[in-house]
Image (cartoon, rainbow, N blue to C red; front, side, top):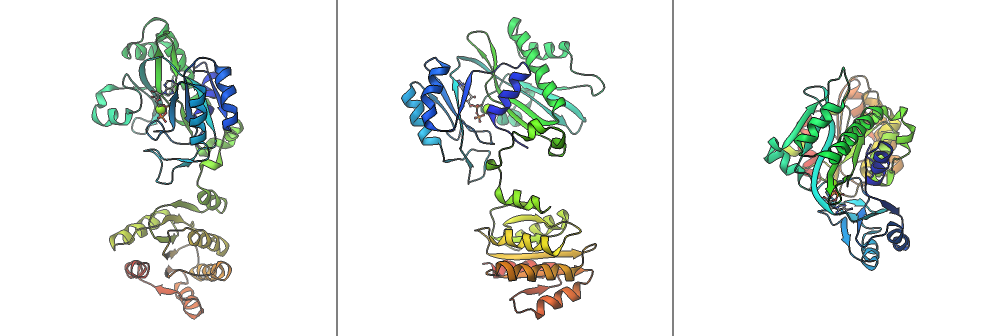
Length: 386
Ligand code: ADP
Ligand code: MG
């Protein structure tokens, strides 16, 4: 689960990590008072969306007057922000964070994640923070400091001080860094975090160390034991279809191709998508209806695929191992009865009761192409959806 920058900063403050003063607003009418309450004469308007790269996408705007802040708010509210980290549709801007403009001296990077190779919580730090940390990591990886935390111990002050010195932080800045890193580690371990990041972690001309941005991803499988974190969920930032699908235990991910896929098993779903690509088509979604699926779930899956605007044809590919193909066929027919069929559809059934399933589909009045061979099915749907 992702959370917003303002929510991450709220957690930072609880764990002794200093942040600039900021105020969250929901309408432009609140902007003037927010600026006045913050004081100063430079403010930064920051779009709250579940993606980074906002600066590059026009979602972080420095303003030198209240009028400028208000104009920026008007331009940003209720639009969608497209950044290098979102898809072409972008994410809705429903809230803005007004933050005091800071006198930045240096922009550092500090993050924690689990390194799957060493199986350790790993600290990443760099003197080259800011908007291009991805380029730093790929082109000059030697500029990234990596420190694995011993899983049998805990992070200690000496380790943090050493990292501070590698970042050339001294005196009070080093002390603030140690407390910030200990705080991040505490959030990471106590809240079942999978990634936590401050980019940039700045030093100011007033000799202070501040988290200017904040990103936290939580492990979904552990959310059941963190009610406070679950309360931070913003479903307006999530894909509506993917959420609806998960209520029916369907694994659904929207893509931008034209062929809707309904498959059982993640591996078979991947292979099906590859085969579609191989024969000149492109998948409109990844959909795994699961191993022991039911007719009701198939009907729901069918409905989800059909309501996606870019879909020009549907390929159903089911291997009946645990699930019976005749049940799948019934599900498809039920779905067609319920939501109608206005797209070409090819169904490939193989395995338990495949013959009975194909017979049911062939005998129905709906126009369904049945296929026992997967390659032929892929070729057929690519042809029909052109
Ligand atoms: P993103 O990573 O999504 O682009 P950030 O919050 O990191 O968003 O902001 C991008 C850049 O904007 C920062 O690297 C920093 O240079 C500048 N910036 C952000 N907030 C402030 C602020 N309060 N004062 C001054 N500059 C800021
Ligand atoms: Mg950032």
